[in-house]
Amino acid sequence: MIPEGPGRPDDERAGRIDLLQRMAIRTSERARTDLLRRARTIDHTQGPWLESGGRRLLAFCSNDYLGLAQHPQLIAAFKRVADDEGVGSTAAHLVCGHRREHAMLEDAVAAWTGRERALLFSSGYMANLGVMQALLGRGDLCVQDKLNHACLLDGATLSGATLRRYPHRDATAAARQLAGEPAAAALLATDGVFSMDGDRAPLRELAALCGRDGATLMVDDAHGLGVLGPGGAGSVAEAGLSAREVPVLMATLGKALGSHGAFVAGSATLIEGLAQFARTYVYSTAMPPALAAAALAAVQLARADDWRRDKLATLIARLRAGAAQLGLPLARSDTPIQPLLLGDAAIALAAATALEARGLLVTAIRPPTVPAGQARLRITLSAAHEEEHIDRLLDALATLPQAGGRTPV
Ligand SMILES: Cc1ncc(COP(=O)(O)O)c(C=O)c1O
Image (cartoon, rainbow, N blue to C red):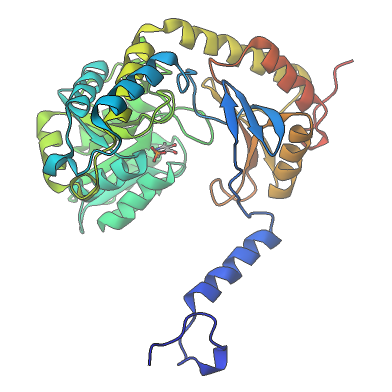
């Protein structure tokens, strides 16, 4: 007889824990502690404006830092290739999914980041899993910043390597972690710009450490590419670090580049090896060629349009000056990620709800995405915002009792 599913009464089960029931208990525990997450359906977007549930909201939570997601050149490139080539790539890169548009995009991001070659992945998550699993194995050491993105941490865990995490931005502690296992092959991986905090890794110190110690440095520049460095080439370029000093550079196309997907850039040896051994590359369908064409248009705009970075800097300065005047606890950050630290998850949720009532969408970020007691509003800015949008946000933040804001007199 085919065993019945989770609807079967407990007493008929053969002493086995029901997986779905266990998960339901975990979910209700999240609801009890104000940690439940739900996707909101967005019906329409226009620049920084969203429509959801019949309401128009000014959003400060997207990662479209350069305001490229709706740029006419991206849309035209996407449509042109979709008209010519259809939608799906139909296969993995190594089968017959690798199209001219992918090759052109790989060349463009390699040139932009000053690396020999690049390899596309369908998402940043997949890129990080693929790199870690291809480079590392049991007996190896992976040293990471405690606040690295979840996919770097997951990648190390899945690789079977020993994962050691050092306190945030503490290069001395990273050195201790490496010194603890001097004989192990080692990868030190860090976000370039930390996704929930907006601050930057001490890349020069970490590169010097890896150079001394024989470890390989990997930087995930998901939030730095397009935003920092000369021509937006990212936090590694801004730190003036070469491909020898940062041999593994990963970045995403779904944030400042307003499209989707990710790449790893580095030496021909690295890229050749990843194409052999990174399972998330080998065994996954290539991104649609129209998407690669749109991303290529985004790379060209991001390189050329310094005004977008200049505008962002003006908006960031305006927000920070206003927040300082109001006594708001903004985290220390000079990037478009400007977290307002509130502590308790319920307080962060209440603050987000209060802002929404005033027509502003700012997401509350709660554990486990951030450590317990460090819930926050993750405010993000975009070149698509205007100064009056920042003023509107500041006016609303000033009324938040949760943030200790003082309504200006
Ligand atoms: C630092 C960092 N790395 C990787 C990712 C994953 O990228 P993707 O959204 O393309 O999977 C993210 C994003 O969400 C991120 O913030």
